[in-house]
Image (cartoon, rainbow, N blue to C red; front, side, top):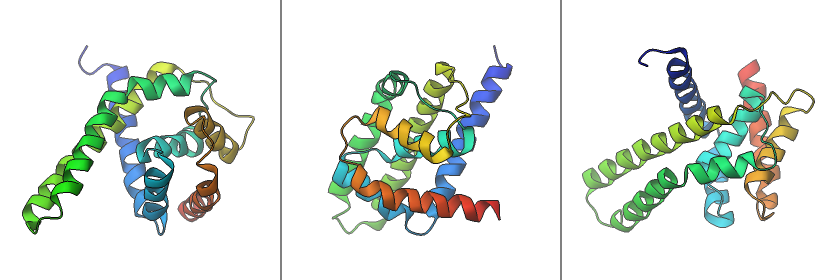
Length: 172
């Protein structure tokens, strides 16, 4: 049903998440930290950003199985991004700057599609507000529920410091 409340909510939430992600990613030190977690701990930047956004902006926490359910439902769009990233990395060793720029644009468009699928999945989960816990506790819980392996803990302290800094500056 075109123009329904739920479609507007979805579109608004997807745009809010994308804008938050772009703003946060540009904050000092964030890009390097997120890419380090992605490259060295096999975490996904969009999934980390979703956990941050859900905790600090939406005040939403995953339940035991909901986080994994969400990530699994978005695997296809995640795979598209990963394949495009690998292609871009392979080709960027060439000296054609126009080609590099076009490949990066395509990768960013696929990132946005992946984020939209994450928002769509998140909205379908009907999560309840996590009012009892702090945003930091919700973030850590969300992250631990989608990444059962604990190899991300080493980078967590650096990341949470950047998150604190970002949200304290955005409130000022």
